[in-house]
Image (cartoon, rainbow, N blue to C red):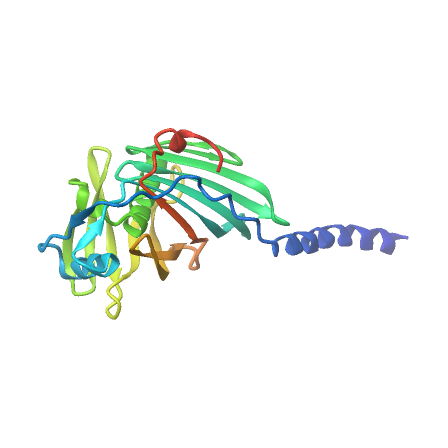
Length: 272
């Protein structure tokens, strides 16, 4: 009898592990396509005074000497996110307002159904993260979200790097440059590394707060699988890695981009 009871007790957590493991294999349906339509995009000339790798990058992305101007964006796609040591198939929608911030709506799923939801917003340096375990706000959260916003807009809205007067580049060498971005009344920065063969961004590194009350940790965005959206060569996949974890905790794949739609209300909403 004792052995039978022990076997049952052991089998319960084992069964849960097997069920969760099975559920993690299922991918969710993507969010419905955003109903807006990208209008004809005006352009801005790429100046001649940029650091050499930045100049090459922007001209490669643009496919010429002028860059389409993107003031807002709605991005949709699947993701893989590690939470509590478990990597979930997920789905995301990013709403970007160039130079001002973003809203992230994210669903982590099991058997293709949402089990954890997050709604994160930052506008003009102030952020609010509505997470499954509560709301996070404060200076460290603001700094982390601000870097996320500028990293995403560098990847998917490169014209903001030219049209926002608060942004500047500092040369490093033939394959790297320092990107200086605004943060509240001061500034923050990325070290941007470029692929010597393609000229495209390989990675962006910054010291970023990982949690409230913690210390800054080296945080890296890596970009891959470049494809053209609306005439721009953009990464369709990026990974995010904390240096103290050693492997990416997030992989975002963007398969739909809509530019220059009115997001003033949508960016303050909640939900996909």
